[in-house]
Length: 238
Image (cartoon, rainbow, N blue to C red; front, side, top):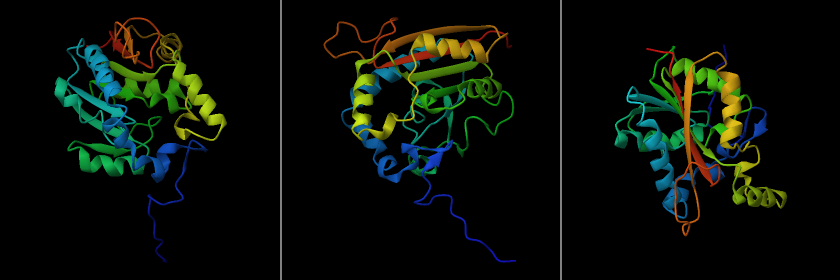
């Protein structure tokens, strides 16, 4: 039998879900960490504060799986707020960096088909990745199967002037990072959650950030700002 050489990481690997994605392109993934070390640094600080405030309210959560973990930028941070994290991602290019930056467990997998038993973790997290899923209802159902007590989301907010700017840039062939993204508002995300969790007993809390530096507040319960965090607490589990 002739042996075939197979390498999952090739220069031709550019698509997922039948479409081209920036996180399957080495030209973009190799510089991903630099975004957070430069102009995105202030935004990251407030995003982590928002997410941390939400998840710490559920004292049942001690372990967490972050899907779409990328280079593990946030995955490395969870331990700072007392949560033991693991990561999963569909992009071998992103995980190829993550394995050198994160000393926890990582898995190469599709969030629509999580390779874990029921209730393997206390919670699931999606940080700036849920926007790229073609079947968000299926992903949420997988998340509550694997995560016993709920889900935390960190989302790019549709109610932001930057969304319009991104779409204009795309029209001129620039900014390829959001071409396939679906931008959510808190209300729109809650509607998807309601469909996915019909019949379940859950509580939702959320808060937004990503406001201009000159604005008098940087975190509020209004659906405006570049970013919002949302926590889905499952109440019908012991």
